[in-house]
Image (cartoon, rainbow, N blue to C red; front, side, top):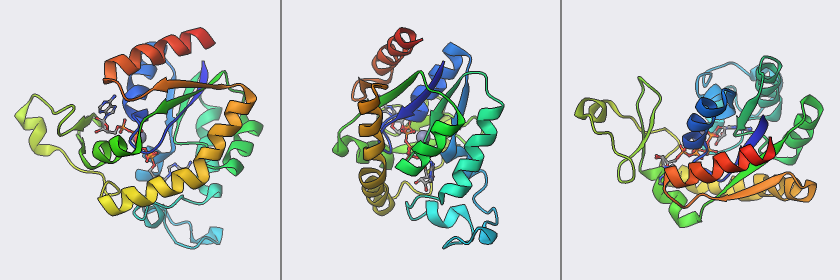
Length: 208
Ligand code: AP5
Ligand code: ZN
């Protein structure tokens, strides 16, 4: 299948994508991870406000479309089935994507704002396995793993607020757009990760 997963910062996109890619054998294309691996890339020749992606990300702002579109275009050209996570994030990106490929489905993970803040400020990552944890909801069992966990640089309370603002302003119109196109399927993201996964899996199977 070819699908987009949408949802606010902290909705559980990365968590569900790990399960989706394993179950369906498709690529996880994530602009957030791609940009985090290229935070120091020199983009000054693109006539952008800042010289690197990291400067946008650490403030919770969107990285310029030109940079992100190129990442997605390249990744899509190599994918045989994919789940796209973190893109499109505004209407211009959505139009760009329409020129690149067709979609079977857009999955939307619905989570309340209060819960999002709690999820993001409590998120921890294992730098060795890239596994996603949470201090309350999903702590690691192995104390050795617990010792090496790190927090994402944009998961501070101030940056989280800005990311949510940017999401409401830029990304919510994209969700409405896919709803109008009849591509959007909503899943209640405020259940346990396994319950969300049951709904996600059934929704993808229905669309395929
Ligand atoms: P990106 O990496 O895409 O971040 P995001 O959209 O803010 O989403 P997150 O990764 O924070 O959340 P998630 O939904 O994946 O949640 P997770 O599964 O980790 O983007 C980062 C930045 O990159 C942007 O701000 C921007 O600067 C730039 N960028 C990226 N794409 C761009 C684009 N297209 N254009 C321009 N700029 C772009 O879960 C969160 C936490 O909750 C974890 O701790 C997890 O364990 C826990 N959790 C998950 N599911 C559950 C559950 N069901 N119950 C309880 N806890 C749960
Ligand atoms: Zn993510």
